[in-house]
Amino acid sequence: MLEKLKTRAREMNERLRGSQLAESILRPGSPFKKGYSDSPRNRSYVVMNNVLYHLHPVKVKRHGVRLSYTLCLGGLSFFLFILLTITGIFLMFYYTPTGELAYSDTAALSTSVAFGSLTRNMHRWGAHFMVLTVFLHMSRVFYHGAYKPPREFNWVVGVILLLLTLLLSFSGYLLPWDQLALWAVTVGTNMAGFVPVMGDQVKFLLLAGVEVSAATLLRFYVLHVLFFPFVIVIFMAVHFWRVRKDGGISGPL
Amino acid sequence: MAEIPESLLRRSAEAKAKALGLPVEQVLAEMKGEAPPTPPPAPEPEPASAADPEAEEPTVPEEVVAAEEPESIEAGSETVVSPPEGGSTAEEGSTAEGGEGAVPAPEPEKEMVAVAAGEAPAASLPEAPAPEAPSAPNPPDASGNGSGNGSGNGRKAALVATRPVVPAAGTPEGVRTQRLLTVVKARAIQQVKTEPTDKVNTWPHLMLAEFSALLAVTGVLVILSIILQAPLLDPANFNATPNPSKAPWYFLGLQELLSYFDPQIAGVTVPTIVGLLGFMAIPYVDRNPSTKPSDRKFAIMLYTLFMAGSATLTIFGVLFRGRGFNFAYPWQDGVFFDDIKDWVHFE
Ligand code: HEM
Image (cartoon, rainbow over all chains, first blue to last red; front, side, top):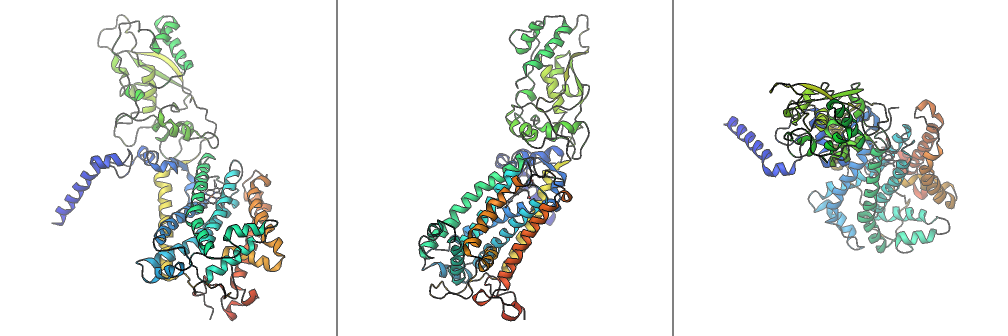
């Protein structure tokens, strides 16, 4: 009985993978394709014939693969960004960026939304993680001297990414609209007020007023869910592209 | 058919002309297809591998040549195909953009590769030439599915030998003879500048590592999020300033600095000038080309000091600042940092 089921399942699998639909979706060399066999050529195809090729070359330097070289920190920063995007979209379904609703919506996430608490926690702790991994990634790049020619410009792009990461995190900080959010952002934006010459203007622009208010909430919300992610994705694209164009991972030391 | 550079065509035309005792111009015109072939026109099988690399499954696109070697480095055959580091990488150039069939595949770095053309028309069929080429520098295809067939070399042979050679007078029918048609310098048309490097396939080596890292981080994050509740204090109240009010942790080092210095200096000059422009300028200020840690002690020291300083300030700001942002021992006065105060206890 079990045997029979197994054979049936295998047959089904074969037929599905050989179907026109599967054929049309999977490009030659996909490991999911019918008849895939492990060979050097197919290993190349897996990358070369797929969207993956936009991120990875077919081959990488042997030492770059060792976890101990990059510690995967850049990759993890990127992955955390993806996780934050996914959890963030979930949160957006339940959150209203108004002075009246922001706090209660956030509180409701923990009490009356399925997986709301888990998602909110993941979004918050993940954001802290990302700031951390970006800092660590920068440090590993520095200690490897990986910013030296021809990679100078990618370092500059990296610093912009760091700034954007901080801005993303900071703009999200206000959204729960609790005492922690309100006053942390007040302290933070006060620092912006110390910019010489145009400090007050900068602060006004950030806060949409002279101090934190409901208008600030809307402003931070739009910055947080739309503007900064949009900009950071563009810079990430440039960053990854430059990693490859600059000859792949630097080193070995 | 892919574009063959004039100089290469010319060279093979010269050799062919010499062998046949015909004028070079005539042979050249023939090869370009501008003049009918002199001998009785044999059927002209267009080698599929040259004409349409993507047409059907068994035909191997030319880019594959670059990716086909075994994983470890092998003197000789790997030399050519391993892409140069910076600039226009051959890897990108010939395997990526080459997808359009515009860039000729790099050829193996043998000094010379003789290309033989059999006299029987069969010799120029797409599948046939590879075995007949005297040297097939590509290692046998490990997949063994028969589609590899030394594609790189095979294709070249096919290109050169597209038109069958006139049977020499007096050869009995059915007897295949081989003749040296031309000698092609096997140099890549694209300049390859760098030394070979030790490379491995991205799949599976890099991607498995990435995938494990990704799973590990997701796991840690999910578990952490189940255990630790994100803080949510009382609703925002403009009239109740908490004491102390702290910025998010990544700005707390700054806030700490602000408490020592005139805000005009600490709030602006430090973060924007030093923090941002200074950091961006690092690659342009540090002109030392070496990446060896022993050669860059000073740079490493500076960076480490900066990072250690920031970390100290941050930790100080998070844990050792109490009411009124005054000094406090966390184990005596408690933790005044809402993000973590629920789960850090010193009692
Ligand atoms: C959102 C933030 C960032 C993301 C997602 C990101 C992603 C990556 C990835 C995936 C790599 C490939 C190698 C590796 O994983 O280490 C990389 C390399 C690199 N990153 Fe970043 N990065 C970010 C921020 C930064 C920052 C803040 C800097 C420096 C200020 C920086 C400078 C560099 C440089 C110079 C390289 C090339 C390193 C090498 O060739 O060894 N990046 N980045």
